Length: 383
Figure 1 (cartoon, rainbow, N blue to C red):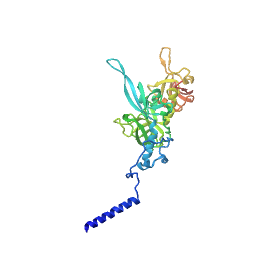
Figure 2: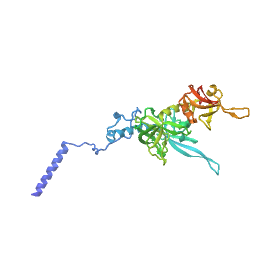
Figure 3: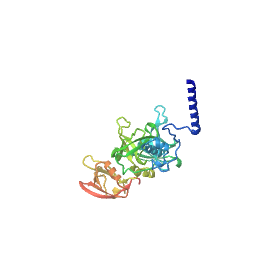
Figure 4: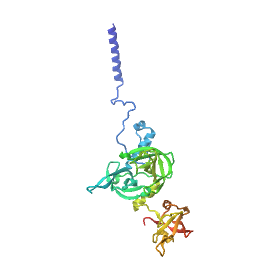
């Protein structure tokens, strides 16, 4: 009896299962596992590089896989990454015993593409003392670099590579005039030789001052807490739109590694310096046409000599002159420019940086124990 009941129940279950399969056939495609997404290995290039997170261009898989903040950072990096370069430098060394000259690695750093003519921007200290520099683009292709110009006082250098235009992706340039403390920043570079590394942070402070390679202050420097390590020098600092706002140049760290205090040269300085480096090989500055040195006692700078037919000479400025016994007689002492006090050579450098060739400047001079003022028309440092 029990056996017949069991067989009857089994037949009912089998019949019900067969009827269900016939009435509701299954799809031929296997069902996806929960939360599993399929992401294509290739993407359509983004045409507008300034927009780093366009919701309309996201696939459904991406929208589910990442948060909006993550998607923004991912797109920003993908848009900016083709513009970032890796620089390796070589230097020549002579063997002490054989006197043979060999080329050895000197260092590495970061850089970025400035324009489609092959100009590459980096820090001066990255290529300082190098006999050769090799630029590696984001696609892995290496190019021998030619030095175009340097600005030691701004720690900037321009190189040029003979790469095809289609291989060059100039970085979008922003402005540093409207940066605010607390805004997000993104640093891309090659710390410790690890190329195409992204770090993020915020602007920690503005208007910092650091010493350049020429021992002259660089003012208006951006401080951020984005991790910047050896090898990041010369790489771009970007805002949340993916626009260049600075060039990573230095860190403050007892250990030499990132301690959360990094410094970047503002992009407005870069925009001022780079065109001159490309055109002249150096920064075209306002010039007084004088040689001077600090006084032993008292304020101001002793004017040693003036350039013949230069701005100061034409304005009547006097340098040292010999007397009948062959001694050098004091001429003028520069104590002010345009109403600002002059005490060091750095003061003169920074004051002239604010002026353009062709402008007039008022020089306050100490002449024979009397203060006099003369007007001069500034010349150019590249004339």
